[in-house]
Length: 95
Image (cartoon, rainbow, N blue to C red; front, side):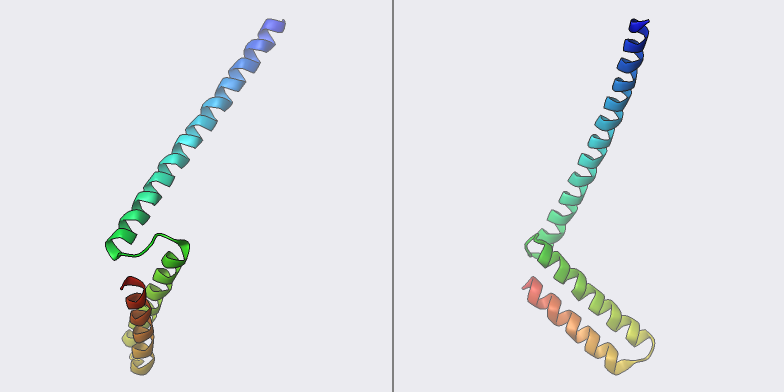
């Protein structure tokens, strides 16, 4: 009787171990892909891979996007202002 419960415990433990190992492998792969993407992006732009640089890059791209949307809506003055702010931020970051 004890051998039966030992076998069930061993089977359950092996299943949990396989699930944890699988999840660890998956998250390691995702981490590697994200690190490679960020390294390639920052190297191509010539910026550091810090969180602040990436945040400024995202803000600059959002400003350019807002400017383009404003120009599509035929709001010329706000569109030019948003584009100018976005380009200034991106040029400061990249140069």
